[in-house]
Image (cartoon, rainbow, N blue to C red; front, side):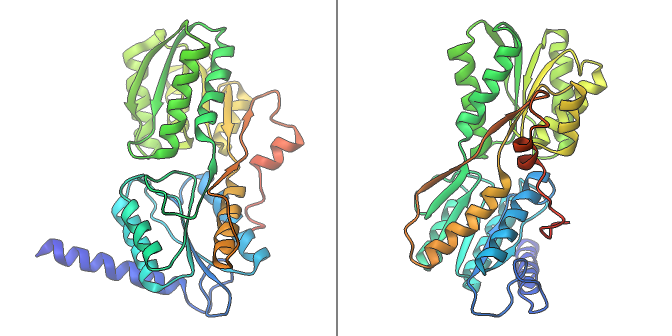
Length: 335
């Protein structure tokens, strides 16, 4: 009985939240005001990391320039699959014109997406893949190539030899799994003399769990570790903290994925030696734009790849790189 009550309570909370997002006092591009504009729900994996704030900015920019309404909604944790499923299902029940979704899990979100399409609500997937082809388009980085880029950077810095560890993110996350696979493949192909000390440990979805997992690896392998790869922002942040705490931040060659102010400060300080940067602003923009194209009956590509760049101390201040990593979020309405 308690489980039934809890489920009903959760459903009521989500419905109330969705209703709140749809109030007419909301600004266009952020809420679902009653108008003739298409209404597109944008559901990221989370809201706490800089990556998602920048995706949000891109989605807002699309809303303003393309004259649509978006509803931005997600949980705070990037492992709350049940909450994301409920959000998708409630948007389907509400009858939005389209959904733009970054799935937390490549299998758990398959059924909700298929249900949306069955109800005539097109779905555009962004950032991380899904084990179905029912969706209309997939807008994302070539994550496999991003992982290979990371391996090339780390392998070249290490001179093609030495010991490395890969700290994975979270099981079920397709985007990071592809990065991890690309990294391992490139190491094996191009740097066969590099020894992989560990590749089966997961950091979890928070910076704190990543810090603890990083400390465990550093304690286990100690001075054997000469290079590290982390496949996303929270994992890279946790590893950077652990390296600093161990006093080995400058010794260990460290390549991460995604950017944040703290990680970029690590580039400046020489404690981070490379960051594979996506274009989250464009992912958010293209996700909404593609959804609008589908609503209007325009043909769209099944796969839309967005930009990748390797950020280093040498190119950090290039104007092109600065424009990629520092979009003006406040000016675009993201606090």
